[in-house]
Length: 453
Image (cartoon, rainbow, N blue to C red; front, side, top):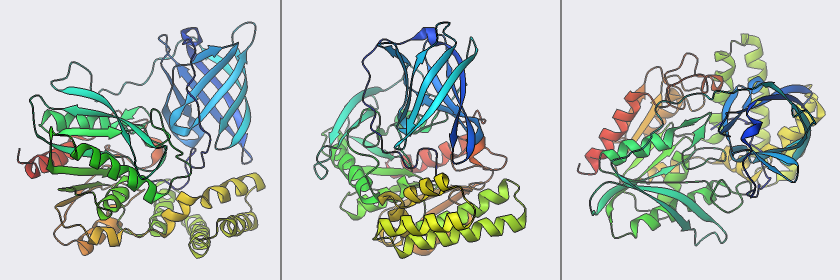
């Protein structure tokens, strides 16, 4: 869960491109876009095999997964599924410059990329599982009957044997996520699936609606829409004869730990629930505290922390007070930001994001009701250095709402459950570890015990 990410307002659907991969584009390509009065560096790194990632160093984002670059009809295309964006451009005669546009979030910005290096080694993520595996894997598709046009593409990993197996459904957090919850090259859901399946638990993970192999409109979806996808995935899994429907649980990360209880409230009969860095207070409270802690962790002077937090509080209040009227949210937030010196383009873009159905829903949603209705075992795990969903704000709330819940705070870990220095998002791509062994052990042992393993 983040305040406003690079991809937060994404509404552009990217169609799959049928074209040959272009490994001759290998190297480091750099350029700058002008957005919100700022010059922002954009970097594409492509290795000799055509594997690619995107960095936005000025925003602290690195190793964002990019589809294999293509050349079609003289147009070079880099598609970035996670941010629902793409770069399209033409090559110079010497092959060292790409002139084109970066499209994302309904905006199209000029971008000229220059090749600055001939080779581009990609960052290693040593925890990412690699074959051979001691279990089976199936590519699956799941239709959400309550949302026509939404077909979820996923992966089901199955222990050896005939079953019926205990199982888990993994639920991703905020923003367009693929089935591995790929963030800066880290594939945490692939690691969770591997660890649990090796322990004897079948695992279903899927691309968010409108992301990668799944269909549907991600940008138009609300918290309840995502919860309906969770329920569709759970019901599909429970209907399989090789699953023990009495031993299927949900594991949600960040806002995915909001969607999972909503799905249970709507009838998904999960046997247990794991909330990983899950919100237990309203979205408005989360955003307010998140903004303050990020500012403090970044070393902002105390007076500036209070000033920006007061502005955040007023913006959140404008959203909450006008939650049923997106145009009113847009007007009030934009006027507020302009009055506080924000550039017009930046103020308009931020106001548009805060007026979106998802953002308004997130601000006013209080997970207390759905958490109170949970009658099955609940494990809530937090990182002690999480500045996005703080442990000391949400852990005690879980205990108040469900006194028999097990709440575990793991010292030194951030929102992604990496060992961290500050907990800031800028560290995510710099940390080699994807999941600290302590969180894997805590969750897998707990799930195995509830699964009779």
